[in-house]
Image 1 (cartoon, helix red, strand yellow):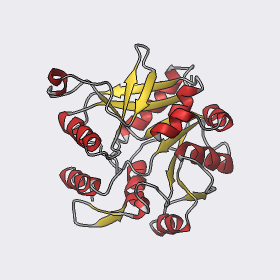
Image 2 (cartoon, rainbow, N blue to C red):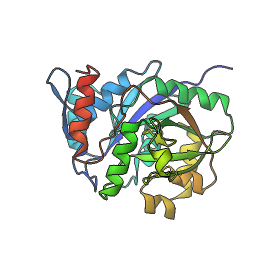
Image 3 (cartoon, rainbow, N blue to C red):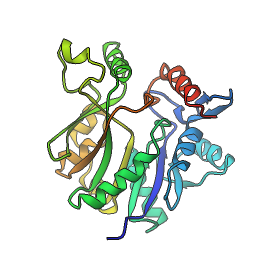
Image 4 (cartoon, one colour):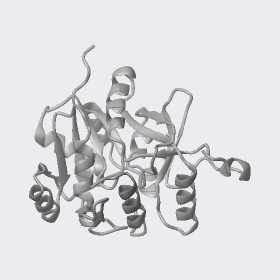
Length: 269
């Protein structure tokens, strides 16, 4: 069986309700150079091997100018897109049949491990019933503490996922799930899986997603992927042990110094 080809789409919008203008927020790397979040997300995508192409999908001219300024490719989408998955669907409809699989590398996850993308595409080759593949990383102690502190302070932090015995997602939440007792939460690697902002979709998954329309759980949690589960579309979760670094997403202004510290520690320009 021939391996599926894949294209990477980075959805980005300026009008975030939690953090307006987030894609253009500067993040200082190891050499002291400040690069915008969207630039760092692009850099992350460019480290992925085997993609037929990378595009930023946006409805905002400011983001488009920034991307074109550093030599990136842009596909303009409608402001009516409710989330990144809808934006990817619209982008690939515009681009045409450039690849078998569409990879959504979310524009607020510049610390995503590039090698995971290949594993997601491979999972769709292996699990022919799954329409979507996404990563779940075992939380390190540092990630778990970060998630719990965000929750305690009423901030929306990272997303966690619980998985069935077949490797399919049971549920995603912005709460820390499952609930842990004191003993489990005190371990070096608490039994919680952090969901990273990456998805590999079959084209048919994007079509079904848009046809289904929004669901209540998606709106309540603010998690677009719940629409797949609500409509009964299987989501395969590619699990891995804790990363060598904390793959923190940029969800709140307070995440900026944490991400900058990790950029310095990993020697990322």
